[in-house]
Length: 220
Image (cartoon, rainbow, N blue to C red; front, side):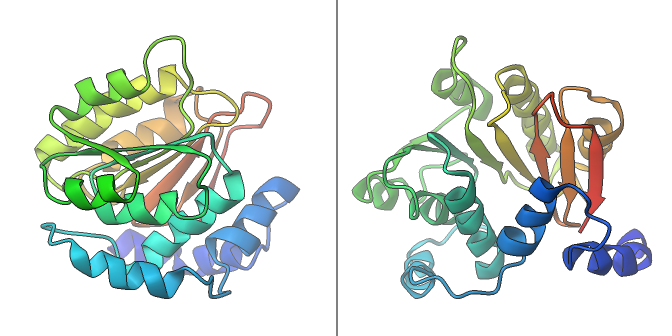
């Protein structure tokens, strides 16, 4: 919390695009992550999220950010690990993509399946290995497991599998980087050369894996 307060001026500066010299990163920051345009699907999705009674969920604004990212990156495959609500948001703008939701429990699976989203419950890491097998590459992945030791351990194992199956088009979003996944996030930013450009949004972090880009982390 103190760290977030101390870094807020720099985060606010970067959110406006200042000191973001890469045109690619500038576009992502200004026109995607912090875009304020109300997409037509937001109202529908806000009603849909009320259908789920999970133990926790992201705010509607955070899920809308995932919606914009899926629309911007146009991934061929999308994997949600943890939250059925977030799966709905990411699946909405790209009907041609392959969607999978890996959930820690069966809560919400029936709703997702009715929406055409393949949803499974079980061992998160084993299901991820099945969904992204050897010989394939990860597209867009959102990891939102519970903010506890078990969730952190599963997130770390899942990250290793995703990083080993990533290419220049892979985009990974990790929740709780300021809490249970803090250690993993620091390692990704400081010591993992597979990760190139990263974006620290305080609550969540975005990881890209394009080896042609200079390794850099933006505080947003």
